[in-house]
Length: 423
Image (tube, rainbow, N blue to C red):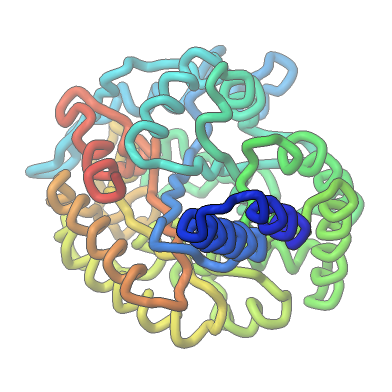
């Protein structure tokens, strides 16, 4: 960069007009400073990166991997739950009908349509919920066969959120029954070593993988399963450093470790960590974030008002921003309603049975969603030293009632809200 500036200044010796020479020198110094700041990861301007979670369970599985299909008919996907959803209580807005149809997301053309819609409506990054169980990839065909092979895949960045929670049978679940435990989210050090190689080769080195300050963004959902996999905090740090060094060996600056720091458990069998700050510090995470508002806010009513949940989440954001001492990327949630995952043939049992029989978020209109986006943007910009990143839940959590893909009722309005706020 210094050599470039020196060469440019040398060239100005051939310019006789002093005013032109002065303007050129100022422009070159300004340009050089801006590029230098960006290369060091310093914030330039107020541009905000908008990431959006993507849940990949709307495609059929490989015929050699029947770990979900064995519980259902051939070619089953979660679209079947969306199709069968019904109103479960008075005023309940179900079913939801996708405007693009019940598409197969492992098809590159299907993903190309999603990529185009996202990229032209203010979404910069898809953060894929990424799974691996029993040492093998799980729910991976959307990303590997659909997204990465789409003709316009480089129009948008992508990253991974390792959904390393235990997998329960919830497709659908009947209130009062024992949850069917299927797969353990913990891994062995040997498994994680192979996972690391796969992450580097298949994802981190893709030209459109999301880098923050030259590091590959990698988010961990269940920190307790992560630590229990290796037996101690010290062993976990060692495994994290191994992956970090693998990233460095291929020309990256390392791994940007992000923690999904939740305050309340949602899925059955989980307990929320009580020491997120300590874990962030001792494990050396680069940032923290949230997946969905209800990880931090209780829903006191069957349909709890969207703006109430928003305001309670903002209180959480303000609190952890001071507490963590680690950059925190806030979340904007579109809605919450996991009732499609309940047994539609049985009477609605209310929230006493836990997930997916939870209370829901109501009045999550496009207008209220847009207001939440604007509030989040304004809060980010009001902090001169804070990060310029947020995430949205979710692109397509249809069976949890949190999606911004178009449906037949609202069309593209939620996506238009993102575009209007972030232009």
